[in-house]
Image 1 (tube, rainbow, N blue to C red):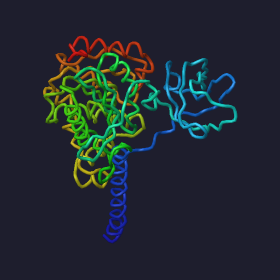
Image 2: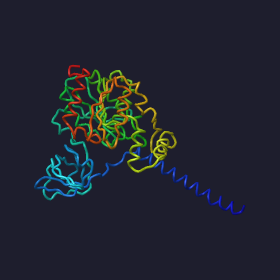
Image 3: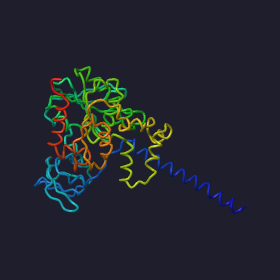
Image 4: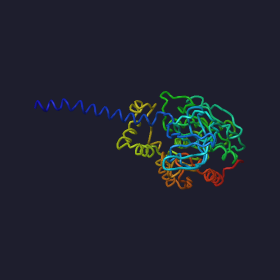
Length: 384
């Protein structure tokens, strides 16, 4: 009996310590979901040839992609543009530089590969202006590209990036006659910060987009098309079902969108080598007010409300989904499921090989044609 009491005395603290460690691990995983992170260094610069204006990178599934891209660097240049792949072997890839790098410039090895390409609105050579949109979070900066139509496009960027991500879509939409309002939202590093500074995965950010719609309606728009990139897709979908202005939303264009967060987070957890049930435990923690706040969020994350496959019947406007089947970050499964649930509304042309939010870079003509054809088919025109 004495030995049993001794064993229990040793076992109970051990179990409590194990439970505490598991709880801390779950909260840590949950925190990674909602707290904005720095841009990951996912590429390595091996050499720069300033004479030939070429750059050699470690070969990854992104750096080997054909097309035009951006590269966030450190040293003399903060951002450079990349062109065609010139050569590649099993471990390296050599690309043409589209940004002139001068001899003697310092370019550090660590870098981040990006689909942005355009970093500032002036690069588009279109008329534009800075505007401020008064939202519940505070004044949110936006770029406005005027055009003749009374149907405006409101563009919403994704997680961990800023509105520059959306610039690629401005030329094709502007050429079709549509004004573009490229917006920011709370906690994205440009718009005001909430109390915690954490993402709500679309559950609160939609209010800032709703304010952008109200801004557009006050400044000459009769209706709007929402275009959301990645997490911006989740924000746009939430706006479409929650906005008091939803009767003025004429359509949605979703680029590599998050349609259901559970699908995305489980996929990313598997890719990170995380075993069940940790991803579901982390989502459960984010679903409860107390543990959500302990994870860094302002409020509980309503994953059921963010599941737009389950809420597909609430959607009422035509939707164009542009999503590569090999996305690698936000799987296309939920996009296909939404198309299957609402074939009357959803158009989803097939794309593959382009990875996440890089369809424009990979196949600019096909991507642009898909948007132009959808606009024509839906009857959107510069005169309306």
